[in-house]
Image (spheres, rainbow, N blue to C red):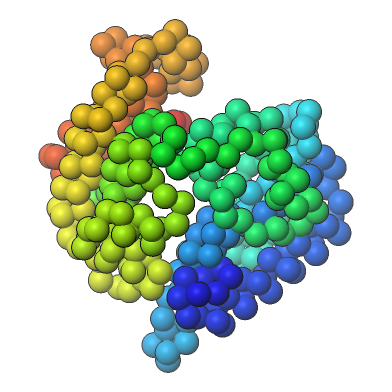
Length: 316
């Protein structure tokens, strides 16, 4: 296993290393006000990135490069927006050069990361990243609490299922075959990860999760993620059924958490959606509300309505 790529694909590992070194130099030279640092997260940051085998036998990048941008505490919205705007041309340039999406996440302050520290995305970042520019992660993230994997809230399993279910529904809308295959694979992995979160048994390393689940489909989906191919890991209906099983387990094990209501969540829904929506769902976490709409569509193999899609886009 290389530093960035799962398995043996040294040419792809070198490509990622060269790219982030060049990006780091470019970002440092820009001297962007209020920018504290940039790190590579996602699969490549954790050393779990994929490599796609080309017809000639060589390997190429198969996943997006996800860069996390940290601003200085106290940065205003205007200053955060200026950081995002300054990095956008680099994103576009390197997307062209590498042939995969090179994404700089919206700039966040350490305060924002602390506030969101229960999110799976933040915790996975803390447990696997590569320094790219300016401040190192050990200082950028020093004040962000690190959770034990078993302490992840059930709402993170709900968020995962919401996003993976939406991907399956989007694949019904005449999407290209590679989009469909990727979202089938993401759904198979997401269902397994959601089960582990619901059980309080999540693990930071993907291979550890595969051993814990002991699921042939999850193991096959993980292998597909590391070395994607044209054919999907399973059929759409099989991935859908795995998703539905995971949602049922989540609702059984974390019913109280998913059913919790508060004025804060009601206000968040109204502020973002400009409507009360279904009064019976008022006060529920917007992720739980959106998840409840996705399941019936999956069962009926029915694409998302415009309203449900908007809910997902806002609260994903």
